[in-house]
Image (cartoon, rainbow, N blue to C red; front, side, top):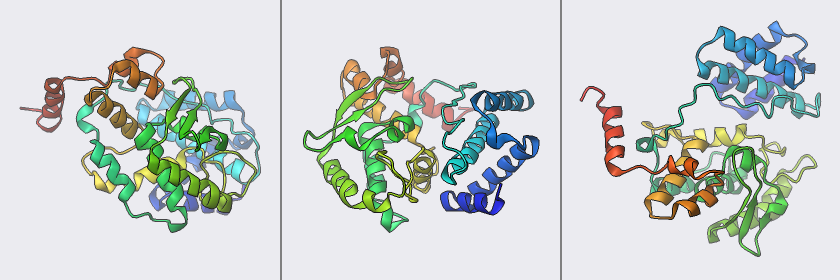
Length: 288
């Protein structure tokens, strides 16, 4: 392994602090498993099992898995592997399923994300496309990275979302602003970025198919706008679904929009104002 090459990859894709954290976890992983570069899916699952036995905090295990995924991202990026053995691994350790509505974002707050000045001028349209798909269609990361150029139907003004283990396939309307954004991105920016043969709609700044980490990082750069709340692709999606229900849209309509397989999944986002107020009081005044 060329450490400098890995270090450069981390520095190019993540903030300085995140790159250091990933680097430490990856170094620890390779120290314990020097043959990890050849590992397959099941062997990586064994390693995660080892981590579970040593760390009882689910967040720690998820952080380790994220670092392992980044390591295999780099192997694929550098041409050392063609497959990503950890790409489909998802952990469900003690995840709280209640949606914390008091922590979510109003429609006007989400709209403000599109107006934020972009750090990378050459990625302006690409980043606006990503943010618009999050705040207008409420997509999951896996749905976003699964988009292909053929899924965008500008003449019809729609976008096709493939099904995932968590969601149903669906065709959603595009907003007028998105049609222009997507047209500009697909005709001008995407061809300029493209560095590998792929039909993935969303590309990284290095011209590769986006795997999700870049989207997560992009959203994190807006976190300073909301210092008291967690801004992630997940909380944006939760906000979009919650706002639709608050606006009076029928539960079944919102279920179809979100791709939820069961009405109960959508029902979790519906909460009375009294219950929402109680949740806020418990958060900000725990002894009140």
